[in-house]
Amino acid sequence: MKNIIKSTMLLVCSVLFLASCSDDNASNPTLQTPNTFKLNTPSYSNQLIDLATSTGIDFTWSQPAYGFPAAAEYQLEFSLENKWTTSTDQALADQTGATIPDYTIIDDVFTTCKGQVSTTKLARGLQIIAKWASDAVPNVQKVYVRCTSNYVGKKIASNVVEMTLSPYYVELKDAEPQIWYLVGACIGDGKWNNSDAGVGISMIPMFTIPGKTYDKVTGGGEIQYTGYFPDNAEFKIIETVGDWNYGMCGDGKDTGGTTYRAGKDSPDLGNIKLAKGGYYNILVNTTKHECTITPVPITPTVFTTITMPGSYQGWDASKNELTAISSVEGVENHDWTATATFDADAPSDGGLKFAIGNWDKSWGAEDFPRGTGVIGGKDIPFKAGTYKVFFNDILAAYQFIAQ
Image (cartoon, helix red, strand yellow):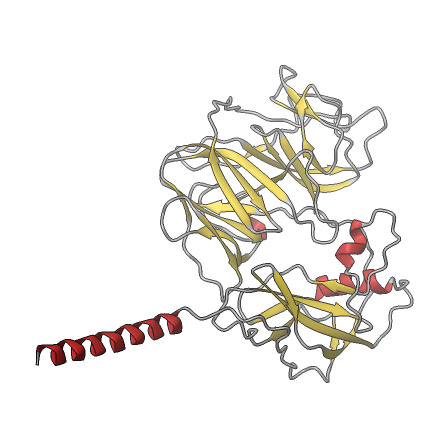
């Protein structure tokens, strides 16, 4: 009888063990390796889409059959001939100009199965492929689009959808570096005014970095900012002025971490928070959407005056004062702004510099409209026009934004 009971118990345990293994296999699915997936045909695909009067084109797709909800990254690609041999990125990387592209990749990366393509970016990409003359852009152009999925380093492409667009001429030149802006309770006047009117008052720009290169098409690359942040600082980093949906927000853990918000469907995990006051360097890679914030052990001079003397005003270091941007109590100011108009380009023996209200200290460089000055450096060769000027006296970084 005891042997029968033991045998029965052993049988029950074996069944339970096998069931447990089955459950484990069900909860740990095997990664499948699909070769393609479905890009949905938009309802408007039979309509003529005018790129000049549209701002964006919406697309949706199905996730590839990976066997489970995989965190894939998606991009949209466009071709004029349904050929996918050489991208515009590959062609632009060839400094000789010998590489001819047959499709363009829109640089936006999506993490859900839908996305909107900027018509401005699309028009530029098509222009790089077609090289239309300004008076020879077709009124109607057939265009092919596909979506690609990248997961664990493997890229696969969807089916191709045909569309009809009305393109427009784009003057091809290297894109300006992307400049993102800080806004928050400790930035500028602290009023969180994310608008064109808030630039230079509630918003402070980041700056390009000496020696870094920036994408010729998108302007993407590394930018930085260094400044003083008080205890319990809270702020965000805005990708496009006026739009809260794109840029760096907090990580939801109040630890000083950051998360990239990629649109209105992407969660806002709150403000970036720095518990301990001090000087910090913020580095953002606008292409990879990565951000690092590092404390820096510096004790910079807090200037009361910054001026912009130059050949345009007789090199008087006491005139053309810039305005301090930071006005929140307890926040040191190291950022300055002004609006400047130059009636003509700087002469070959002229230019401008940034100074401290006299010639005891000044910064200059050979670059315009942005750069990083050095003490006693060369004159900045300004160009005719009206500009919003920004200067950070820790980095000695400056930029002139045409108005």
